[in-house]
Image 1: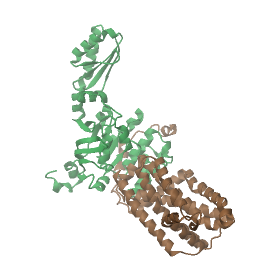
Image 2: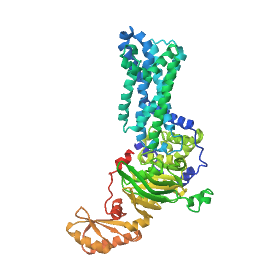
Image 3: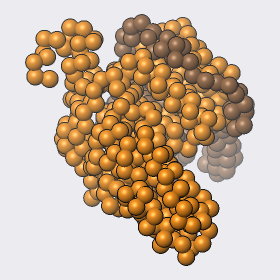
Image 4: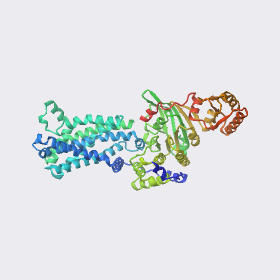
Amino acid sequence: MTAGTAVTPDYSPAPETIAAVLSRGARPPRPSALSSSLTFGWRAMLKIKHVPEQLFDVTAFPIMMTLMFTYLFGGALAGSPREYLQYLLPGIMVMSVVMTSMYTGTSLNLDVSKGVFDRFRSIPMWRPAPMVGYLLGDMFRYSMGAAVILVLGLILGFRPGGGPAGVLAGMALLVAFSFALSWMWTMFGLLLRTDKAVMGVSMLVLFPLTFLSNILVDPQTMPGWLQVFVDVNPITHLVAAVRGLMAGRVDGGEIVWTLAAGGVLTAVFGTLTMRLYNRR
Amino acid sequence: MTTSTHQEGATAAGERSAVPAIETSRLVKTFGGTRAVDGIDLVVPAGTVYGVLGPNGAGKTTTVRMLATLLRPDGGTARVFGHDVVREADAVRSRVSLTGQYASVDEDLTGTENLVLLGRLLGYRKAAARERAASLLEAFGLTEAADRQVKHYSGGTRRRLDIAASILNTPDLLFLDEPTTGLDPRSRNQVWDIVRAVVAHGTTVLLTTQYLEEADRLADRIAVIDRGKVIAEGTPGELKSSVGAGSVHVRLRDRRQREQARRVLARALETEVQLEADPVALTARIMNGDARASVQASRALAELDAAGVVVDDFSLGQPSLDEVFLALTGHPADTAEQTDKEVAE
């Protein structure tokens, strides 16, 4: 604090230098949508660089989840933790990444409540760029979360039949779907007043979405009415698709289902997000 | 506006003289049941500094946010350089910049990163954005602070970075929303010097403030707003001659002499004298032009002395916002009422 004042004790604005920066030739042409979005993605990276603690949620949380569920349910459900891990790992990867996606909403909410978004909104550019940039930064976090789980899984004995290509394809599908789902959180981030409210509502959506699925157990053992929900839950289809890719049994139907669900999520919640963003 | 269609596009100078920087007509914004802005008409000629003076919650920030395309008006129209702020928002955005009341820079990033980020968003290529950031940081005395995170800046340094960020796009119109609120006197003077330099370059400035002194020093014209309405408009001189050039504040040694002091002051200054809550204090407004205020004040002091009134403290100051409001509206400036609401938006 004091350092700031000490830096330039004798600063007195010189009209000539200020006039010089005010008359810097022609204004550059308006940047493209892609360029603006990438610039915001760069901003997200800078924020990770300056506040690396924010990666805690994509490292510690997934490790905890994987260890907990593997050893808690492994023996009971599949005979041994190692066997259960072959079934669980793709699912737990989906669960962790999808759960960390909700931080998008809370951090957006905090950002908007500060003044810096006013500046962004008063720049003539492709309007969704700040949001897309946000989500691009988050895709990096999702990839990290997925990578952490993969490494841990390999250490614990996860042996995917699909090989590196299958595993990478599964992770890419997961990250793409999380990008689509995040539009729901950006909507809540702009709609609700406080970051705590955003967190609360996101939990309310995420818990049923992740637990009432095929992540932890085979839905065959569930009551019929619950199976109905599990069947329409997009997370179920995502998990099935990721499992298939990682195991080397590509299930085209599930992949198409997942991509379609992602498209619908982006169209609906992306539109609602932009409507809220423009109206503020 | 009427006959200038063929001139408008001709030259920048022609455009400047023809189209006002800002023109609003019955501008309205409602939050819940409150009319935060209640039919504001403003005309700001290009190349001038326009001061909007009012207490917290008067509607200053809301007005500025509508003009900067950040809020949609609920009624009336607003044009910036002839462009409608709603229908031609991008055309407005390309020519204006806003330094908000709450720092509109990213606290997690460094000064350089903030400016490079904005430069990139405005379309500068990487090298050009870096170069532009460096020259702005230098012009604003921020070179040494450039690589530190903004959250570690002092208030004055942060405000300078904020203004530097606002002129990165070389705006034709700069909005400064309470640029010196909360700053120490030295930082305040620096901001004033910056504003003068920006205006000298030809940029139009609209500045909101709670301080008559600030508006008086910087603005060519001033609008006083209260409860969402313009209650007075004119040059600082006109405004002061309607509310008084200054105020004389007197503190007596003996409260029993206050009635006598009131009569002496009323006669000497030919004005009404107010008795303050403090039983030894009086305040009188001086109504004539400010050139004579000191002459009148010293005569009043001499007469108090001649009448045998013992004066402990005697001061002459510019009217405060409260006194301006009392003179214009008959009620003191009430603050805080809508402040929270404006902040929340």
